[in-house]
Length: 190
Image 1 (cartoon, helix red, strand yellow):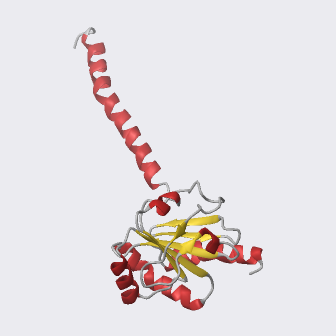
Image 2 (tube, rainbow, N blue to C red; image 1 turned 180 degrees about the vertical axis):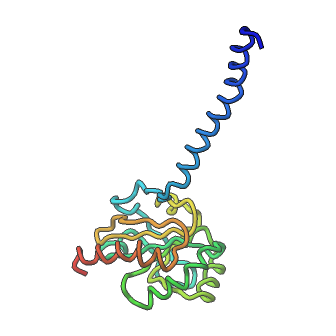
Image 3 (cartoon, one colour; image 1 turned 120 degrees about the horizontal axis):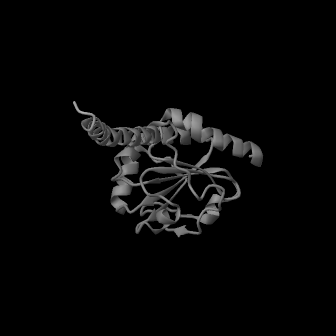
């Protein structure tokens, strides 16, 4: 090998290895970002008053849901629909929580047909004190809902204290949602 060929060979190796190394570093960065452990999505509504709304009841129920219902006590608001498969998953826990009478549970029924919503509640149980029918989804958008189910903890002043995205399981209910409820209840003296 001549002396003139040596720099060309090094340049050729560098051109081959450098893109692979850069790609590996970018891939490692993406991997770290995806799996670093904190997968919570903060809501810009935390600490703010619930949006102003006044929803009619789902057909077959006497009471709808409005902003006024969410003041004066710590409560949970669950956004659900009969066509939402994950909503079915958390219903047994919602029914269990309602039976414990620890916190008022309200609901926003999202873009559902009235007969389907009633059928869902008849089949799986009805843990809700009041349900508002959000037929066009406008109120859910105001709440920042982008997937179902979503569950909010509301303080006694009507402010959003916590938001859980997706169906909750026993662990997330006991370790994430209820500690917020209990802390707020202690602070409110309820």
